[in-house]
Image (tube, rainbow, N blue to C red; front, side):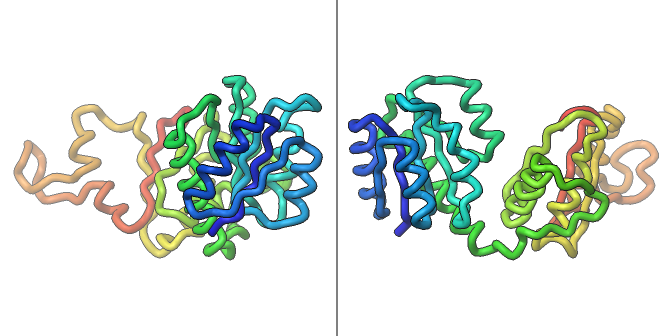
Length: 241
């Protein structure tokens, strides 16, 4: 049974979210304002917080960093009727798990809740990975620490990871850090610069080939994807990944 905090000033939304989460076998508590919601979050440990953005006294984004940084490290799902894409982007940058727009059907919020709670459980089980081996990654600014925390989360799972950034910002360094802090660390870390692959040899380089399948194939060769089996395959574009 997960502990879920609902912070929303809409009584109908609160009632529906209480019904949905209780029906999933969890224990919900609902609060109708930001200040009391933050106080409740600090007073107890929650696995998940469902946070509205629009309140008479302010915006839910104002307390989002405080919620994300609580000792219990709850996942946060933004639930709002504004449909504000910019607000959603800011929420994701702060570390929100998902964004659900009102009005919503039960199934539209059930899946994000289930996924967030599953991830929270896996994260708690592997919390020792939160301190990364970070060779060649330097810096302590808040933004960097958030990136390192996300890398630690990724290292604890077998999920595919998208690393986005401009050329030279260190995408490969973070990919390697994720690999070296994962259960796959004793296997190969294979880097493929997709932008540099010759068009006529892409299939052979990625998937390998048997002897004699084309002119010059004097022996069988294992592809890079096979070399990464059990380890990590980093696909780079040379610009933004």
